[in-house]
Length: 211
Image (cartoon, rainbow, N blue to C red):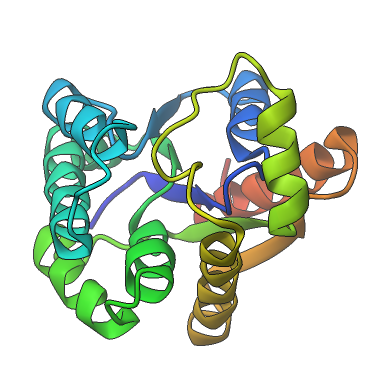
């Protein structure tokens, strides 16, 4: 059994989750901040292939398999060892992203993509997933305003795709209500941060009542 705590952060593009995760990390001790796809060298290499703006010919199943491959390497090389050492791991995206983006938005099927990822992650699911919900129009508007943000291949998808991503997350919230908690990401940065840090601290205290 892992001694650490695994918390993942999800949301459509432009929800602001990466900013919030960085703010949360600054307030905690003994935490590991990482991201998907990426976090370690092999997975970062796969990330560059997946998100390269010129790779528009990529087949949806190829995309799903590449995400799962990056996830497996990242999990075994970085996340699992940290959890075994008792560290709190904060991860920017995990399996729910694949289920929402490739499973629902790409039309591959949530269950089909889940099977691929079950092979990759075995039983390593998060203790808590915080989902930052935002209307696609507002999320994309934020992306366009943020000149320093990486604009990748998925950001360039049409508005309908981003609506389907949000629909996918709504399905996942119904399916995993005990794990996924929604936060309104259209609120002010301060309020989103306050709600997020509260959830994270509550989960840590729940798993470590003596701390």
